[in-house]
Every structure is written in C-alpha cells, then in structure tokens.
Length: 375
Image (spheres, rainbow, N blue to C red):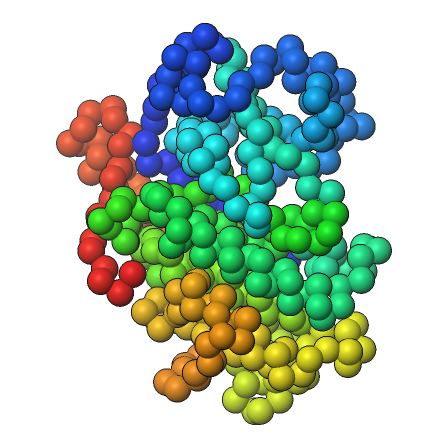
C-alpha cells in the first residue's frame, strides 16, 4: 500500500530563532532542549539509532538524562520551510493534550534552522509494521488484543473531537500513525497534520492533507474538513484491523483491490464472516466481529452526516449502543490518486492566484468557515 501525504500550508509564522526567544514566546510552557543535547543523546543522529523516516523527516531513538526513552523527530529543512504551521501546531496542541491513547509529547528544540520534536518512545512499532506488515511481527494479534486496539483508537479520537478544547481534527488517521506500547495499548501519533477547528465552526475548506486510501471523499475531492473525515479514516482502519488486510492491494483483481468495496459486497451478500482475518483461526467473538465490520461501513458512508460521532462509535464498539444499519449505502471511495492529485493542485493554484492578487505576498488562506449544526 502506497502512502503519499499532502501537506497543508495555511499560515506562516515567525518561528523564534533561539532558545531564549522561544522561551519568551507564546509556547514557553513546552520543555525545550538544545541541539547540542539532542546530538549527544542520539550519538550525533547516528544511523544505528534511526527508527523511522517520514514525510516530515527522520526519527531517532534516544534516552534523556532522567532515563526516559524518547523518539526524537528531526524535521527536514523542506518540511520546516513549508510547514511551520504544522510544526507550531504540534508544539501548542500536543503539549496540552492528555489521554492514554495519544503519544506523549516530551518537548522540542528550536535553534537556528533546527526544528525537532521529542515524544515518549512507544515500544511495539505501528499497526502498519506489525498487524499489516506481512507476517514479519512476533506479536500475536488475537481477537481480544484487536478489540482493545479498536476501542482505544476510538477513545483517543473521541477525546480529540469532543473532549479537548479547541477540538482537533487529526487528518491523517492510518495504520502507520497508530503505535503500540509494551502492553499493546494503541497510541495515536503524528499531529503534524492536525487541524484545529474554531470553537463555533465545524467545517473548513482547506488543502488536502492525508493519506490515500484513508481520505474521506468530501475532503479528498472538495477539501471540506470536519471531524467526520477522521471518522471515515477510522472506519477504514477498523476494517483493516478486523480483516488483517491493507485498504488497497493492487496485486488483486480490480473487484478485490479495495477493502471497502470487498466489505460492502460481503455485507450485501450476507457473507461478512468471510472478511475476518483467517489468522484468527476462528478464535474470535463472531457476533462482535460482525458488528465491528458494520461499524466500519457506517463510519465510511459517503455522506459525512450519515457517519456517527466518535462518542457513539465508542458506545457501539463497547456494546453500549446498538449498531443500526437502516438507510446504509455503499461507502464512499476515492480510488484514482492521479486524478485527485491533479484536481487538488488546480484548486490550490486557483486559490493561490486569488490570494496573491488580494494580499500581496501573504500565504494566508483561511478557507471558508461554515456552521454545521450536525457537528
């Protein structure tokens, strides 16, 4: 499965150029580290300590003086030049979030051109590397563990969407961004694409940021972002966890290529049991597994208004709310990456031209904010 992120550039900020300036800024509550300190604990960012590489840069494993094992995320010069808003979002948002299903933020370094984020290290890699990694993991994902993971992710999103203020839309919920701790509790990671929603607004038109296969249609095609876009991504992820399959597999025939389409056909043919991961060896709660598939289909409805809020998703996953399939339709699916890329680039170019003509060299693009009573 190929994951190609689009990064949003909505605002540009003046980032403090030194630790002293940083500590006097609006982000002074965040723990800061010098670049020299981080070079030391990562052995000069050695390849041996490198544990990951992503669109924003490289990640290294290290240990702080107090013994805390951390992941040091060094943002690439390209990402820091073009995505300062994303960086500051991480500082301001992550430092204030507090939930057992979110990766813990430990601090940062802002020094000269260096932009580095420090997180508490999560031991068991991501769902993409383990459950969906082609059998290369030693972790046995029995049904109880999968259930715990699904409910934990849902609770983390419920916190971001409905408990935390201001509300947060993650925008890039996917298997790569779900890490597992030593007890296999899920931790939602990578708030580099997080998008804050103003308190009285629930929809914002913006450049698309996210990963193909998990993108909600209204967001991928029109740039309309609400919390229900995360709900869609969660629905795809839920189906991946239950089935043990990636959302897209181009090695299969067209009719079997997309997990959402296969799940819908199985639902229509009353054959959802065939979707459940064969590696469970029939050792699972059949009724619960089928309910999870139905919830995945509800979360991926083409219309955002038909998708449940994450608080209701949690209730359905835990059996505290019935899974009602009345009026359910085929899930929305964006399958043509090339057309999507061209469409979004043309849309952004048009907006950029408008911005330049009215604001000079400003890169500010607030988009259109709309009230949405359903949210």
